[in-house]
Picture 1 (cartoon, rainbow, N blue to C red):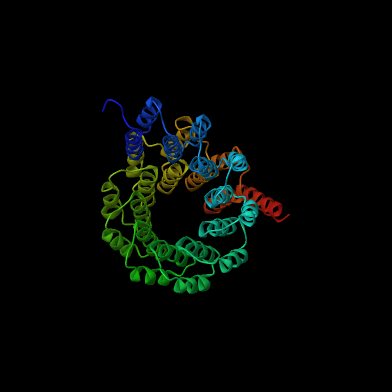
Picture 2 (cartoon, rainbow, N blue to C red):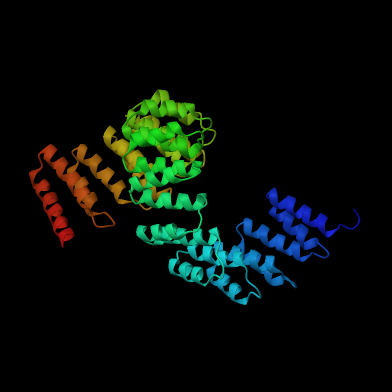
Length: 424
């Protein structure tokens, strides 16, 4: 093709964008002899979808000719990516506005948490669509009162699935399960999202039987549905049903595997189930390793937990504060003072993590169990932050166990002073 037609160039640009070849798309665009306005618009959209709003704005600024699509694309890009000030400037400069540009600005204000500005722009709109109403409804739901959400919902001329699900979420998160259930029954078409919302809401509010009932009647389920129900059974302490459900899942993701490992931790079924789940995971993240370490440590397999920690490091996955809590807590219950000290020092020296109060609590608990009460007290007093009542109570319990009345009295005095300061 000696001289490409602009449609051919644009088609190739679209292919690169869909395949995620951003660099090739940019190179192709820069080499185009005579890009059309449609080409410039397409390049802006490519930058927008790649999460590069400033590059999209730079492309817009370079355009010699712009049409309504150009203005709408760049306004929506800036508004929805958090550059609301730029979006407002563009909106004010626009030679002509349509309902899409009004909606884009409203959505941008919503994403930035400016509920009052969403209301203002909504009232100024010459015409409103379902998208306009949804932007207002979502803004009020995120940043307003539940009663206000109900008022907006009642005023809407029509509802789509997003509106129904926003109202359903508002009821659910407010704990109003009666209204949520009534609304669910009124929905003309219950989709997967609405079913997941109600399952999670029932579970969050302690209505575990209701969650199970909705789950069993769902014609379709996705990974969110399965993960939620695994958590529901875990809350009931029914690890066997959780494992059965996990095995029935058509496909696992890393969240479901991590959740299953944590569920099994509370059931004490380490060797036969938790490790099996972990080993069958196609890839593991920080949470996966931390969950396994916590399972092993909690169930007395401390050396295996330390081995898992070392394997985690060899895989190039860095631990976080929670990982070290699992290690230190396990060392405490196993009475491994040397191992706990070594890992406590590693927190900052090797991984650059500032120890948090939970790390110090674990060490105080360990020293208290080992009858090294003076060291425990010194550690509390050397914390880089004000010791809390939990640390002193841990020391007090150890003093009571080992009969150190004098030190126990000092710990009790600290607890009393902290209680008085909190009461003021």
